[in-house]
Amino acid sequence: MKDFFTIGRQQLWIGTIISVCVVAAALCFGWMTWSGSDAAGESGDWDTGTASGQELQADENPQVSGGKDLQTGTAPAEEENTEASGTVIASPSSYELPVKGNVFRAYSRSELTYFPTLNQYMTHSGIDILAPEGTEVCAAAEGLVSKVTDDRAMGKTVWIAHQGEIITVYSNLSENITVEEGDAVTKGQVIGTAGSTSLYEKSDEPHIHVEVLVGGNPADPADYFEY
Image (tube, rainbow, N blue to C red):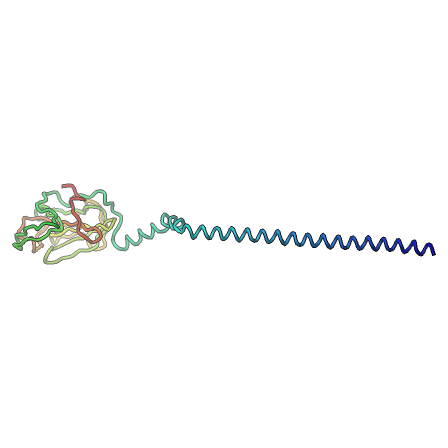
């Protein structure tokens, strides 16, 4: 009988110890699971917060990426558009007179100038430079021939486009024009010779008429040429 109770107590202790171990293991597993989940949750919130912060910074500073594009991507695109429109690679910093001669009629958009051929006063959108017929006329700067025209008012005319939406116009030329539309020209390259094809200035001494257009509007050639 004594052995029976002894064996029973031993089994009870063993059962108790096993139960305690099971409970302890369960608690330990539960704590580890909760701790890992909480840590993961904190990590997820941090990542989300960082991403949101980055998005906010990008929204608050849209010009940052725009500035980079402006320096790397946009500039070549503008050059392509400029070239396509005929406003090309010339520098507007130095232009030279197409012929060596005296300017006898100046640019005048605010005061009227007398034109003997028409016997009337008009504004003058360019300058007239004395040049005997046959005198070589040269491009004022590097550029692209955008037009070659002929009309009763200005006669044979060559239009050359330069960088910065600047166009130089050479009128009252002879039939001997040596360039065509689309030709690239260099500064000082001969584009034709002086003539007498402008009916509006027929009574004047032999000369060429020169204009400078900026953005399509007449500009004072004195700002571009030294004379």
